[in-house]
Image (tube, rainbow, N blue to C red; front, side):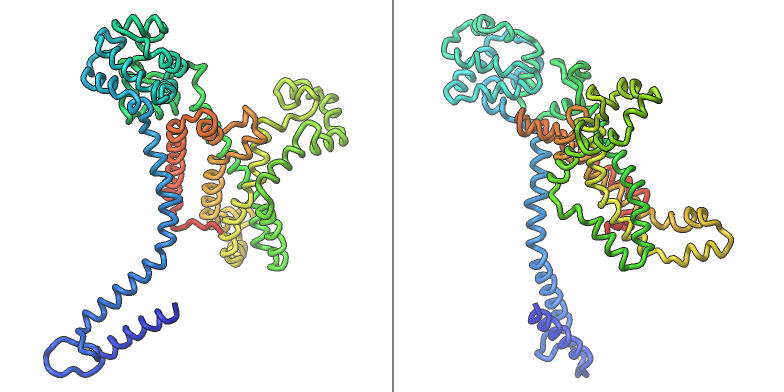
Length: 457
């Protein structure tokens, strides 16, 4: 690196000396070796740019491989699924040739194409893949395809009657509507499903039955809990950051170590520690019981209302596990340092003389704080809120361990579709919507505060 810098300096020095050297005649300025000065400078600049690119190339490759490519793959998968179209080419071709037919077809060619595809699927053992794609939009379809696939060799003309003998569901108009949509590898149906909508056989989009509508509620729950967690982190973190910025340096360093101490502990360990603390027979409930809290609630006639509200469980103790309360408490503890550090980095740069000047001009301590000090902390507040909110939106481990069914966030559903249901396209659609929400938050932050003013510590 030192040799390269020295070579660059020598080239620029040679060019500069050549420019200062007296020139004879009216020709262009040249370097000592006769090279035109303009060409020498251009060559040196090109070499510097190439060296700079080589230095950052590993980082660019890392970002491309670990960030850009996975996001691009996710976005593509959210609108592309060829599990049915690739394994049912004959039926897909019939759908393309007959776009106007809706519902159960009377054309025997459609049934013959389906029979041919199922025979091939039986040989290649892909009937389950065909059914899985249709099952995403019409539950129970996978068993229909696997059942019929086993009998594909026995299907004979007239095929419509043969299919109907195997299972009456083959003459369901909804099934043929879903197969028509599945015949195209590109589809928006996963985005419809991600917001509790469904596409009818005629192409219209309607809301799903209330009993099956889960995603919008969980999206709303995720956003509300994330906003609440960010707000609680701000309320708890602002005084701590202010103290770190105002106490003497030797004390501030010690307090800062205590703030950073949780980073030295595994996230899984911290989460399971909250299980020990918050469970019905945990440390917190035992301490409250020892202090007479529950007896006091009974004397004040508040015990029964709290039990009816679900605050106190059947064990007669506070319910703080496997619900939203446990999720909020654990996540606030885990994400609090991400609020304190941006606030501290901004507060440290605010001169104390500003507040003293406001006080000397007659402002009271609260007024000086709100009018002079607090506005200068807005970049740190915005950065902390944005950082905590984004981290909370995508958190998975903590809600999975301490949240239970009532504390489930959208990240838990994404994990479920990847690990259990294997509906990767729906998981990708949910992730894409979450990505859009995060980008909107960045846009709002840029409009209100400005990305250039962001300070993360």
